[in-house]
Image (tube, rainbow over all chains, first blue to last red; front, side, top):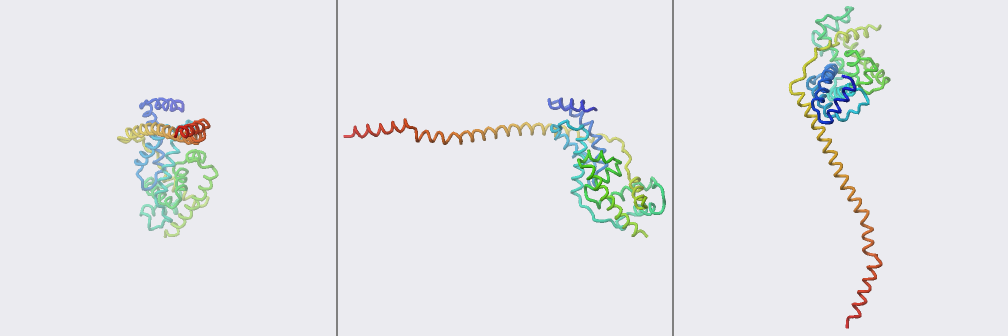
Length: 192
Length: 97
């Protein structure tokens, strides 16, 4: 759907055409779902958060000015909702080896002793380990790490999603990365 | 590259989620979303009406407050009314035996 088509749907919606609004909803839903699943906070169910974002977007649809592309506007609402949710969750100061499952400890050992990529069977444990490492970060840093390393987004893209400046993103990324490195070194030291 | 950085990069790479198949819209979400949109439209309409009504009340109050001193002054210091009042008093005193 192009921006012109979105504008047309919105105009029809303002005249009371619900079919046009539903078209918009079905256009943005996969985008919201993908963003929330990529950045979802640990404890919250992704489906609940997707619904929360959808309702939020729909109830603010009349406020969309058309100054930015529609999906950028939707993405920013989704990312900010995720960020607020992360802020509500309690963060743990640091992670210990005892907090890891056997599989997660195995991943740490594998990374330290063998070069190359992890096996497909270890991906789930790797994902959980990353989640635990990220839990020790500040909410904004955590979101940034996810967007950058798990979602593979560029700095410019993150700037448009979050509204942060590129300098701020670089500073935050550097700080978060240093924190992760420190955490990981602590784990390595504990690993016999 | 620093070995720790290398390990972290490999860890992140392994943890990357592959694009999940496009999930269908959950049951009832479409209706809820549409209801939220309808509600926001109604609320914004009511909000406009509320602002209009409040504006009207405030305008009346300001108009009344600004006219009050002028009316009050006219009632107490109007020369004609003072003159007529004085005449009435004079006539009344002459008619009294």
